[in-house]
Every structure is written in C-alpha cells, then in structure tokens.
Image (cartoon, rainbow, N blue to C red; front, side):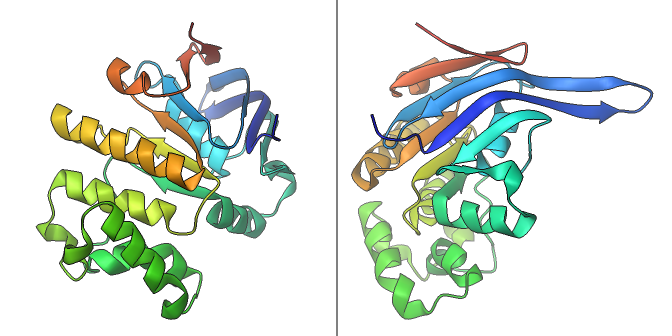
Length: 228
C-alpha cells in the first residue's frame, strides 16, 4: 500500500468557551487517506465536518493528536511552512466558490500561481488545459460575474487543480447548486481527480453524491465512523 497522503491520529479539537468548559468538536479521530482515494464525509450540520477539513489542510491545528500531510506533522511546522505545504500539496474547493469578481475567468484559475509569484509562462498552458477540460476555454476573458453557479464551481475546481495537488479538499462543493447541476459538477470533480491522480475528500449532505466515493465516513458526536 502506498504511504497515506493524509493521516489523522487520535485527533481532538476543542474551542474555548467563555465562562464554561471548552466545546469539543472532534474526539479521537483517526483516518488514513491514500493517494487517489475518494472519501466522503457526512453528518449533521455543526457536527465538525468543516473543522475536520480545516485540520486536514493545516488551516487549524488539533487540540490533541496529530495531523500528517504528505509525511509531515503539521504541528511541527511554522505558520509559513504550513502555508507553503498547503499551497504545494492541497487544493481547496468551497460551497460559495470564493472567486474574485474583479478578475476574469483565466486569472481566477491562475490565482494560486500568481500569489506564489510564478511567471505567466509557467501557468498559462495549464490554465488553458483545465478550462478546455471543463468546457469553458471560450470564457477565459469573461468576467466571472457572467457565469452561472455551475460554471463558477467548475472554475473553482480548475483553480484547485492548477498546481496539481496530491490532495483535494472540498467542503459542500455542490451545496449551492440545484440537483441536476450538483450531479454534473460532482461527476466532473470525480473524473478530474481520477485523471490527475489526486486524493479527494469531500463533505456532503447528499447520500447520492456520497455514494460516488470509495469510502463514506460519518461524523457522529465528534467521532468519525466508517459506514458499511
């Protein structure tokens, strides 16, 4: 078996609460995710699913336990080192797209490379490739404000895949779309991550979309349980 791209080991996460005991969100969570695997995370609203993704990306750190990303314990890295590790290893997709309205489609896809200070010659071919694969190459110079919700999420997927991440984390990636568009976007996301060889971890409320994963895990009272 290949080494996991992501490992959580006995992870707890609590948040301080004024005048009371800390609020525990996750409790003794352990999971290994190998390269190329598709993992769905389900559970009630507020159960800790998004917190789990934030820990996986190194956006937040656990109260106890450890998170290993590409063989590195994130707690042992500085804030800057965690940021650089995330940029190089992880692609992030959110429910509300987080596209920048003052940038066109091409520059929204290219944004991670632009932030990293890469020259256009290094990322332009990759942007064209990704836009072509999602059927939006003709919209490269359009304002993202002219796009439909499904088109915006396709652009967000392209942006997340730009730097060929080993791990893609998607938090309710179709939660802001109608059912038909949700299925189309999820099928696209699964196909692209398969082609890229990326592991995919996604949070969803939809049993239909969760069924597209290799494994489905449920967050229940802070614990992470694999479903049959």
